[in-house]
Image: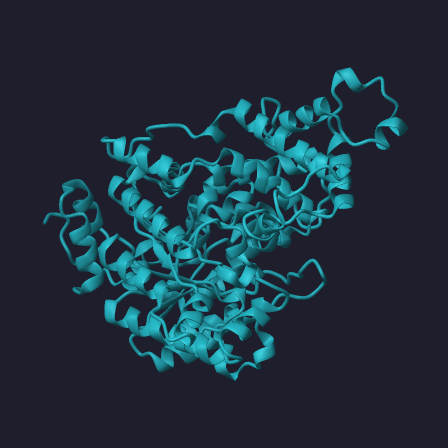
Length: 553
């Protein structure tokens, strides 16, 4: 194992940070092609929202904790009984909706802060499938035909909840693509999703432990994400996006100062070019850019996260036909969405160059905001961007779809995913001072037998590629947490990389130090040193990630 690790691509989401229904429905769950997706996402969202502590509650916990790295309190989701109660209540709401008894408080509520109700027949079908695996003893005398004609009663819902998340919950495997819905293959999905209702600092501590903290120096750079109006998040958040992300940035600054579990934590702040484009088109200031300046300049953030598969290119959006963009964006930019998206991105790139701050971007045909939007993440447009902005540094997250190195993958509708890894490698090799790529969510390294052999073979090819010096380690946790054995991801990835001939120290952290600007004098290094100036232990730890700088001040 390497002496230290930088996890260049990770997340520590909390339900408060996400439009959770839309995140589950449009980003996290579609990749698994599960049945009754609308009803399942709705059920999960109601369950999580009932459990998640608000940002203010976690803020009070962090401010009250004086011990570095301490885990001062448990969240409601940590209590099996509270999990069971929350899910039983959510199941009851779904059952009532299937009966036609659940109504939004008002039409306005249904279009804004409420999650869209799933089709009633889909809600009923999901409940019927779940009840097949859970029959409370008090109901077993009821005949199968009689039970099939009715929706589950409260005791049956309680039994389902107990088996999924309560005292009876097991630890089965995550449902694979196109899996049927049942208690046995959804229990791990609920277990994974339950982490989204936990405290962020506890998630950071767990992630640090995966990489070896506190026995090994670990730097986490979790990405905050603004999905913006690409998936209609404005209809789910009850407050405006500026307020939502300002709270997230403040929370991450407190976590960075506390170093939970002994890991250093410095995030990438989100930027939504839709929001920025609309403001610029109206002749107003750029609030997403103001957030970037504040987070990087004063709150411990190290760079910016962009999410092109929502539906925008890294550059040259003006070349795309206007009708390729959502109608709302066209209307809000006077029919010139591509032009204003480029203006919004150009302002960001110029600011990143001024701040000496890098960008991490989702670069894979996955997690798309709408059908075919994943193709906007093509790394070709990042090459155009770095050619235009010569001081820009970018990490092509997921390396163009690294999971496709050992085979093809198809979407639920049968469309093949674009495989850009070799293209991304060529771009990295042509622009080694500006472009890096991370190996996050390469879940094949967790497998045995031929799948792992194929993964090592693919890594061996990359080790011989000219792009190899700019490869980065990344976990994509908490998303990686969906996979069996995810807690071993760092050790298994490093083992496979060593077997493939990748220089471990460079892959594990030195390449990332160059990407982050920590290997040389400049603003990036100075900001982190200033952030930890009053904490001698943290200062020593961060200096260890700055090659050429002695640990002692």
